[in-house]
Length: 498
Ligand code: ZN
Ligand code: MN
Image 1 (cartoon, protein in one colour):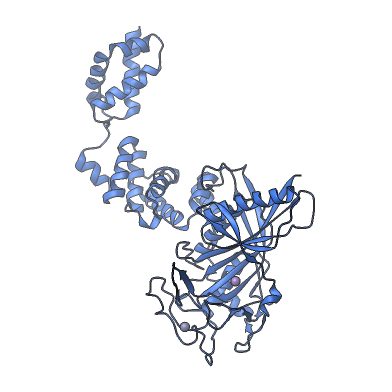
Image 2: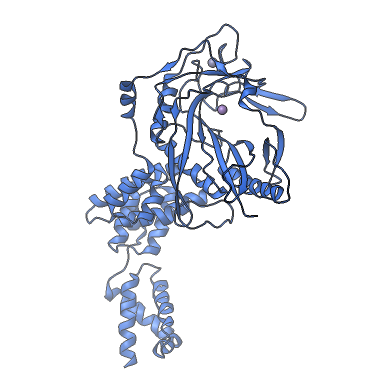
């Protein structure tokens, strides 16, 4: 039986607000435990919540970027439960009248999409796809509990933080699609300043709903929910496992139970946690302490002015404005900080005398820079080489002042110790030797000392030329202009051949 999977996500996004959702406590992740608390977020009776307007604004902006309809009249409900990590024993959330309705996210995955899958998994063919959103609602976070062998500890700093929950339709079908979708969503939220999207600090947490059905059948299968995933790699691996597990159960004639499961990283499996509650179990009812959340069209239009350029628009603009290949533009635009850096370096390189082309900067970014970031596992904002230094380096190589080998070592040196390329080239005497008169003796020497290669070349083994070029380069410590060395060698060798 051929089976397929249907995947839907509930993504909790911590909003980049300065205070909590319903009180004025701060949001600093690094504050000592239980210092950012007050009677309201600790759930003391008699306190009243106040809606954080910054959180509303950020959610509305997110809604606009994600093609939602903004609901001008929404409300908050109590989601009742026994919460050891929220002492009111209900969570303020939005049940049936959320702030943003519908919505969609376009994304690409597969080969040449710039999405690198975790592990040694190979990607599928290039595919573009749209995932529909069901809605986005606002709610408050719960405290963080930590369990030790003999005791548990709880930190209420997180209790009451502003959370936006993005709920998708079950439009995803593979682990790869889900992974690529999440990367795109993270890009958009980062571009918009909606959230810091720091996964290590738990800014993005995902509940993954997954079911399987025979291909061709319309009705979705019974779903399981994998709770509280906080790495994209974890989600990818958990889905690979869960889809396979469900397929095996169904193919063997078994039934999937509607349940909540947990991903056990160490073992690479999901295991049951508890039977899943239905919405009725929470006894939602409208919060009696908060008024309805009403917004005006004018307010929304005012906020819309803060909307940034999105990754997709930026990608199109980079390709158009700087005439770089679409693939380059996609990779560069994927990270806002990489795109910012690129544009700054391009402006400086174009203004230089003589200038360097945007494609030269793009080549540096796509190869050396991204390799360096990946190797060091650092962000674009943390590199020592400035856009001005990269622009200068591109100008020096474009205009043959230094060759590519020298340029790469200068690049690495600046990444380590900072500095400007021109200065380094001057003080270390790295400038490329293009002067034929200076190179000729070295070429002669290389030929005299490598008679075998000369004979091999003359006998038709053209590969011997590369060896001879290397010999000349070695004699001038890598500074020769390789093109001129090649020309000289070819000229002298063809004379010898006559
Ligand atoms: Zn508080
Ligand atoms: Mn929630």
